[in-house]
Image (cartoon, rainbow, N blue to C red; front, side, top):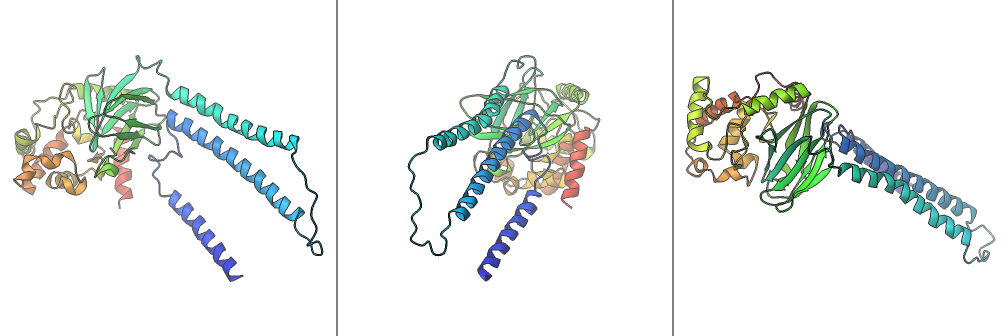
Length: 365
Ligand code: CUA
């Protein structure tokens, strides 16, 4: 009896944990609340498969329980040998045909979705972004707009956006759970997919292929905005100025330092002709996060500049000369942060970004 109670207790604890843990997810980082076409298609296929499995489970369990009771050994019949049967054509046909039907029910929507999601008939007339995965960040180059950015992909709501994906080092994998499925990002062959988001907002993206020390920190965001905001953003990005002059005096000092050591890897204008070495920092003043993982603040930027190894072990910035000879003081980093926070493609705040920052700030308190 006691053993039985123990089992019940373990089971209820387990169910409790499942409920608690499933509430830990973020709304913008879950495949279970789809906010885009690919995610919705995947979710529907998941749902159909689960329903079919539940149906099979219930039928099998019902037969199982029925047989256990109906054919159990009864008192006084210990030596009874039941009637022996061999082969039953009808039954065999039934239990062969039912699984085939169930598999067809799963296969039809799965295959239809697979073809839908690979459809490229609208590619030429849509936004095309060349996605480049790197240890441990993402570069996004808008092929026709001739701009590029890093870490934050802006797309208009309800529009198909085609992604052409390549890695410049090891294999990464692009996953945007709320909007679309996953796609491997390989060094040698280009993979393509399209994404389409149904609601404005900022959605969390992850790298899902182990790619080095900071694989789990290789996050990015997709910023879904109205068509109007998107057009403004593109125009702003096209007009980012490589000769920009900082406004405040500390930012001006920061800019001078930036020009002496950072500019060889980080461009401050979004022109797609800039070589992709380190993340492009155009529009950095409107970023949702720092390094893709820390809440946006001057403090986080300073911490990043002073000790990038602490935030993202093994990242490409660790070879920078200023870190090798320890030539940077915290006040220098603060001035550089002042400069970076001034870099904005649009002065108008982007609704999705503002809302995201508020929510993140709240969550961290
Ligand atoms: Cu890139 Cu994991």
